[in-house]
Length: 164
Image (tube, rainbow, N blue to C red; front, side, top):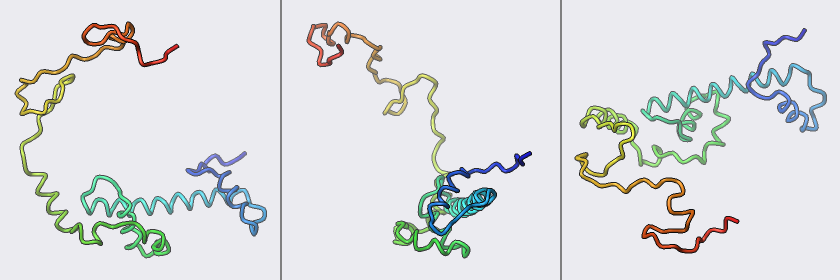
């Protein structure tokens, strides 16, 4: 009976196929791709955790490539990846972003301004101050004036489409 606890996050057959592409690799034991899959899972988990820490420190909402670069730069265990991420543009290294100023600005922005007015379901967005004095075009229904070839003025014309 096989051990069913060997579920992996990465395809074991594909890992085995990649390993066998190397001419120096002979036969591969059945457990080897499973172990490599688990190691890959732990490795990627560590990189993502470090990148997430950098992202949170910068009060950013999404992990960017330069967050990953900083995570690799500050983690000794990942120093072998530094050559790979050297080409990633880093806005903070070029002087365009001051990390401390960015943190202070984001804290200031949270407390300023009035709360946004929420629209009711089905209400269209207006470009004005919300007084509701704008007129909106009537919504087009599917097929209105298109099947017979009539335009808005009610005149017949040939269709540009070749539906037949």
